[in-house]
Length: 317
Length: 287
Image 1 (tube, each protein chain N blue to C red):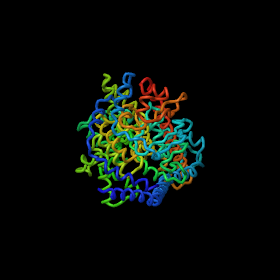
Image 2 (image 1 turned 90 degrees about the vertical axis):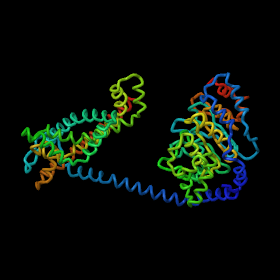
Image 3 (image 1 turned 30 degrees about the vertical axis):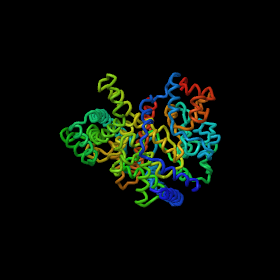
Image 4 (image 1 turned 180 degrees about the horizontal axis):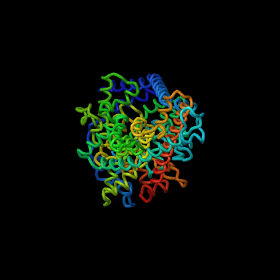
């Protein structure tokens, strides 16, 4: 684990103002239909949304945060997704998009070895920097500390306060000391744009928060252990448009500090928040496949693969 | 917060996670071992009990043992047919009384939330804890004394009273797992409440109801105390026979008691298997 890689990241955290208002994301979020079912006429809307991206990082020559090479995930006889070769750029938002059942979530869960516990078989190579995630000598706990996850439904731990939720990952990793935990909690909550809302009720049950706040709490909980990568599995699918806009704004802001891999059904969301996109579709034999990757705007404006074109135009889906 | 503080915290978290991993792994191993030991300790009595009963009772077991009427305690060759028939009749009769009553009562508790329902629920909970011997005296006072007659009906009544509260609470819990929104979905289609109760709630809860009721039945089958008050002869039920023959000094009687115990165990086991299969088939059909 390279500590040197982290050093330049520190300055970027300080530049990002966690409490800054980003009005434009909220506005687009609130007015965009949330279903991915669009007609061909909707393409210009995607264009506009993509054009409205203000945060787009120029793709630098920095080494990718994650590299997937020939990844295939199967459950017994059933292959869920295969042939995934993909470089995920450091500190950018990469969206995995595509219809239901094409293996996006399955692939996401392979990245931090969640399939160790669900009986899924992962083949191919996944690298986090220069660490081989599935090498026999790799400790899954340490991988997961570096690759955090936010799930579809907000899942704060019940019977724990807001504070306990945020520091739970730190405690699981053996971090002790009240001052340390308090500091880390404040920092994580600030990053998740939740500090001002909850600072006076840190010791109230986490489940008393609204759905959107719960999801931001889950993001704070994931951030508290200082991961390099944050996996987000349709983090807005259980939220209303306003809460969705807040999360999207947050994703954009967090990308200056952590690498984000976002699974989404919503092409508008992918257009709004992601720098890179990877499109997954079902192959002829109903197995999920990676069809095309590239900068999100290019992918939506000038898809190379005809299947991608059909999908982003809403002709299939 | 300065950049230095943030950087130091990052490094601390990284180092702590790495350094504590061995200790955390060890703690995990120890806890897992404790769980495994506890699991074995929990199952061990059952295995020992089965082994003991089989090794002691298997000798008594024969076709004749099952179909012949009991002989006097000192004479070998008798069977336990009357006890098997009696137990089956008593339990069957008790189920006939308890299952419909408990189902309807559970439906009532499921649908109503008033003071009466709360009172009934509380009574059921209290009744679950009443020692079976008291239920035996109750059946004795209520049925045997006024009618001047011991018999299967009084015994069945006692067992039914014993099973009722367990069944009611199990049924209600099973129904509660069928979420309120499903109930509302039924009502919203224009169904009468009773129809929704039958088609949606009962149907969905049936596998859990079967499992829950089985526990009550298994408990009732093995009850002895209520039968002491309601049956005139030990040959009228298996548990009574085990009690009376098992406490006699004659080896023949003791062997009969072990044999009966084995039959009773087999009976409960069979009941469990049948109920599991039934619950499984019901839940499969629903898909």
